[in-house]
Image (cartoon, rainbow, N blue to C red):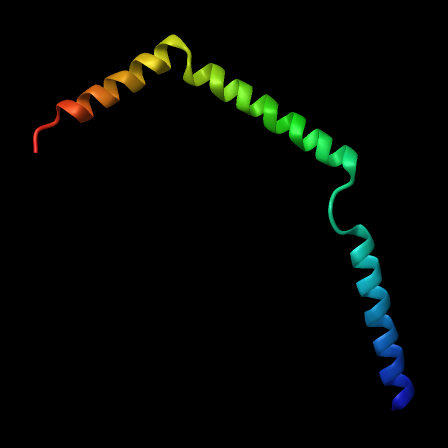
Length: 69
């Protein structure tokens, strides 16, 4: 029984070491993530500042301010 417990404990330790080695992103993955986030932010900024969306947002704000309570 003692051998079985030790074998199981060794297996758990090896699994934990393997999981720790693969945890997280490497520098190149961080860089790609940042580039993707910036690209998404630029596209979102362009959409929000476009004429049609800007006019619609202004209309929504104007209706909210003109609402009677």
